Length: 332
Image (tube, rainbow, N blue to C red):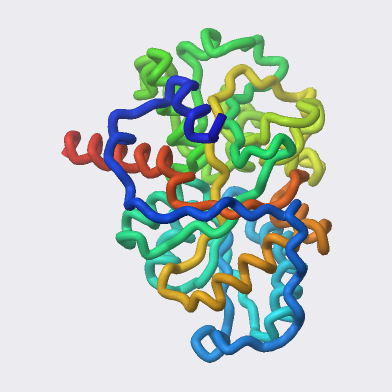
C-alpha cells in the first residue's frame, strides 16, 4: 500500500486532495539499496553558477546541536564537490522555506508541511529530491502525542480539559497532521472546546521539554513508529532526545498516534542546473552506505537510506496547507 493510501485510510482524507497537482512523468524510485556509487571528488561545471553551496537546516532543536550534527555532512560535501559549503539553521520551520523562496539557500532538509508551503509560495520553485526510507521500505513516519508517565493520562479521552503543546505552526507532525486527524475523529482543537488551551512550544524538542517540566500536559512530536518504543523508536525527535541524554522514555507515555505521514524531503531550488541536481542526488543516495555515521547524524537515527521522491509523494501536506489557507481566509 502506498504512503498516500495509508494516509487516506487513516481518516485524514481531505476534499482538497481532489485538486490535482501538475501531471509529470515519474521514473521508478532510486534507492540507497540499489548500490549507486559515491561521486568522485572534483570541482563541477555547475560551481560557476553555485560558487558557494548553502544548506538550510530546519528548526526543532537548539542551534548548536543542529550545527554539530551537520558538520560532518558539510565537510564531506566540500571534499566531494570542492566548493565552500555553508550551513544556515533557521529559527523555525517557516524560516527554511522562506530562505528557499528568497534564494538564500540552494538545498534544505524540510518537513512535509514546510516543503508544501514553500512549493505553494514559490509556485513550484522548489522540488523534492530524496527522503529517508524506513526499515519497512516506506517513506513515512507518525505524529505521536506524549504525556508524563506520572500524569494519570492513559488515552486521548484523558486529555479533555488538559493543555496541549504543538511543536511549530509549520510542522507536519507537530501541528498540521495531528490537528487534521483529531478533527477527523470528532475532537475539536480550538481552545476550550476539548483541550483547555493549546500553544506552540517553538520546536519538537522544546515541546517535549515543556511536558517534562509540567508546562503542558501533552505535546505532539514525531517518531518513526518502528523499532523499540523504549528507546524512542528507530528515528525521530524522541530517539534524538534519548540519544542526547535529554529524555528517558520511561518518563513519558505515548497516548495517541496518527496514521502514516510522508517523510519530509531534502529539497532543492527548481532553478538550479540539472547537473547539480544529478550530482547531489547521487551523493545522497550513496551517503548512507558509504558514510553511515554522517547519514545517522543528519537523519537522527536508523533506516535503510534514502529514496528519490517526487511531488506526488507530498499531495497530502499540500492539501493540508491549502485547507489551512482556505480556513484562514474564511476567518478574515
